[in-house]
Length: 309
Length: 266
Image (cartoon, rainbow over all chains, first blue to last red; front, side, top):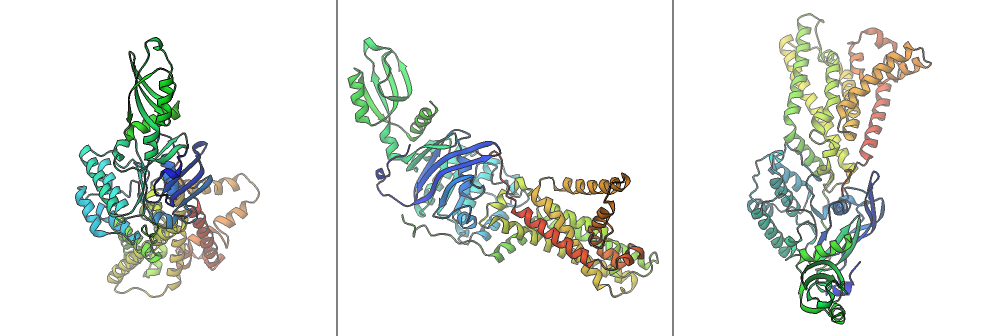
């Protein structure tokens, strides 16, 4: 399912263009024909259950793994053929454990210095600011850091060279609530100061509520939906209805993905154009009490529920 | 937001990558390197001191290097695991691979920088040993230039051979021990069982003009540490050394070109 790009007010050239990606690890397929388009400058929220293929997609994008089949371009570059150039454009906060641990004996300061040597655009002043904001102790050995502390260092490593593309794979995983808030605020500041395309994978879509302008839903190695967030808001809504007395066991005349009932009252999260759904409900004799726009988390959960069903 | 706004970032130059790797190794592995260099210095010093006491007659640095060659070779074999790739076995190498450098080139650079670190440690240890020897003997005997060249070549060969499992496996030491044990078993069992071709095997591995044993033992042969019998049978080890260096370099090229991926990423 792909939303009509004309819904996007400003149609932009893609930062990421992936078509029919296939990747297996041994006999285990991780991607089975995933296609994804991330416009330049978009904040793209990628959601999906564990094992959907989100991490594999990010590893392919950063050239860490090789495609079995399909076509992939990052800013027009092929990660397989130009892995160094592609990685130079990327700041990657990996899912815990996939990009590290960095050599445990290295102190955080050395680690950052080592990173800076590889990134001509590394901004020392910005690095220092990020370290202060995230309360990173630069004299600690990387191997001695807790999961949350290591995550913060990885975030600095991803942001300090101001890359045009950020791949954030569960970036707030392991962070306490205070640091999580601070991290998201830092990310918002970063994006307001620097034009950046972001591909964010998370199990907590509410964290991207204020930032995400595009949404993709992955399941079982495929992208089942992708499009601007405005399309999601238009297409998935909650309908609070009152069922007719004579038809308590009436089946919904609209495409319901989540349902809750209490007596004659029902709350249905449903797909489809609102006008169309309204007319179907009225025709079925169902009284509409309200139609609500969903939060990003509710909408993505609804989409996942639909795909699962 | 345009493509122009999102400027494409440059990749680092080869010199920058080499320097970054050298700094990284110097900072993270200096203790292991210093310990090994100290061991070499002590070994060379002790051997030259033994020479001064008359145990082997007056020692030159070349003779000391020849006698110490077996120990130096163990150091060179283990160096890729203990220094070059320490803490970064293939399953933990994603951090290295995630840098904006072509993966094969990056691994070759690290291997080369590790080799340079080994050379520096050997030079430092040798110099320290020479100073010790000169002090206890009241001066070192001169000569033995070809022993040093052969030593550099054969230790380089040991380093390259040790690099192959270090590049490919999380259990490189086990592979090295296994390879040694397997070849020792084969060398014993093959002739004992009377299988045909035993002399070809011996010629390739131990005694032949092109054998691996000859290449690895080059400085010991040249310094006379193996006794004259072996040295006179095939008076020069250079051809074996050249052949096996080429074989080991090819092995390293193959090892860096094997693309390892994290299994089960989803």
